[in-house]
Length: 442
Image (cartoon, rainbow, N blue to C red):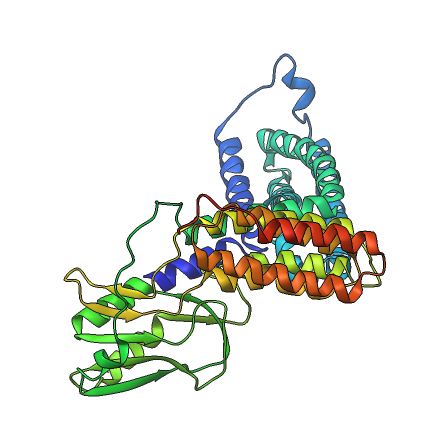
């Protein structure tokens, strides 16, 4: 069930899904309105007699003009979209093309023009002019006029939207919003300090089971999703423990061990296949369960901004600010435990989970490496460590912040040529080292 849900979400976010749905809706609407025209003997009166076509030739002319204009504008929209994708790919990174392709407004605009063209085509074929039978679908032609007006408005909105969407601040803002939603979905809000549970002895637990089965993957690709509830049900029904080797976002080659299953009875081929089906692999990474996906996108923007060909430290600083906000949230969030128990309190799954250390490394390591030689960027990184340190809740998080601050300080010593820049960095580093953290565990 989880697999079908994931496939539906992936289909719904595809670039062609909305245009195809609008195309089908336009075709059905055209047939329905043609039928309505055939059943209605309405004689236009008042203002409508100036809007509804009075003759077959005028109806045909209107539909031909609207249909030709819509398909022409659709070609323009295609061209503009491709130009935007090219600019986004070269300046901000090819992985951000996904964000532009999945933009709902772009899909709606394209779908509107294509569906309007198909609508006019279908209505045009229904016009009959013979000695035995004449048919002018007046209401259908009026709807075509309305769709043409909507298309003109959408063109103006689309051009404004595209001009805004390629600005680096807008791109960073969109990535930050997506990153925030993804992180807050995967990591719950702060629930206060809790007493740590005893860590189970996995090696001792394994000895309680007679059989050990390694489950391998049948193809190469990125691990996009794991059906945790499905694995839990299999573990309970077969009285076994499943130890996961990877988490969503990892790349797996064919034949790698997905997990180990410890049972009292030898695993059947059917169980092997069921466990494999709970792991969804694909050609690309997705943000569904991959907490680091949006962070990598933000880091890529910062890395490109710091490249010699672009040399845009302001964009990199904006990325650091947004990453700082996320890490401040994660400092107080509850990271999921790798140990998953059933309703009876028995350990069933040992997962490979994210940690605060791993997220911190993902967010700032590459920016620090690419930012060497840019005092503004390294100083902002140190300020980011100062900000995050005020949200830390325990000594382990404190040590991780101090470690990153030390690495940033070393990078500054190796690359700063101006002694005043280095002094500013040292002042911030000393402030961090001697900072009192009243909200951290003692």
